[in-house]
Image 1 (cartoon, rainbow, N blue to C red):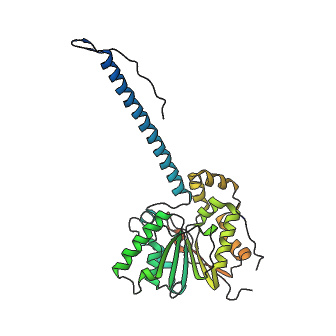
Image 2: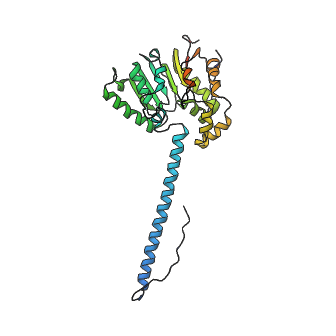
Image 3: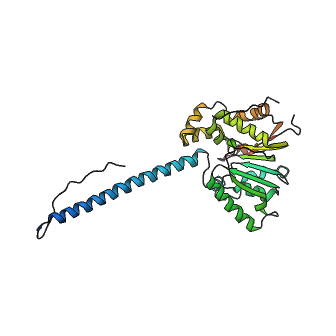
Length: 292
């Protein structure tokens, strides 16, 4: 196994309207009337200016929020879009195997609103799943879905006891716990675009560290063309895109030769021939039973 290394991550301008005298049927207005009118107009213009500034600040905040949401790929309504309006019917489930999840302690990285993970927990009787996402709003949505799923009684286990959703940035956090299975569905692109090549290597190495001997990593990487389409979602991702040297086609070699996984299996090769927007490869990497 190759030597393991640690990596460090380093308003429009206000325009005065011209004042004109307005005459009533009885003649010109008095100075007091004219003065009061001018004061009222000034107050109204001041309020309009304040409202305009407020609207601009609100618009700036909305743009910042949109960049924040897009920067890490934490899109709202992702599963509804991916699964053609039926978010609970995820085609990836047909490729997943019971032995990777049943009675296993699992970690999912980048769970979005939790749709897929809740389905996995129901289908495969996991011992536990810690599902993390960087976005607190998506974690909140996931917890709502979890409560609803648990109340439905569709699982033989109490899903509230099995699944835990947590807001966390895996790259920057510490994980003393060990897991039998780590899942990472369509997340590598966003790690790569935010942390560059060193951050991606660190991400892979941290996954290896939290896996038990004989554990598996189930990885669904995005293709390079997806990077090209989406790298301008934020200034950070645009900058990192220009620095990236590694490509998704390199990940298998890196995980086997550099990180130290024992083997890899492509579990959906035929699916890749389908004309489907999300027909991404799913790779299962296994860690050695005994780590020296």
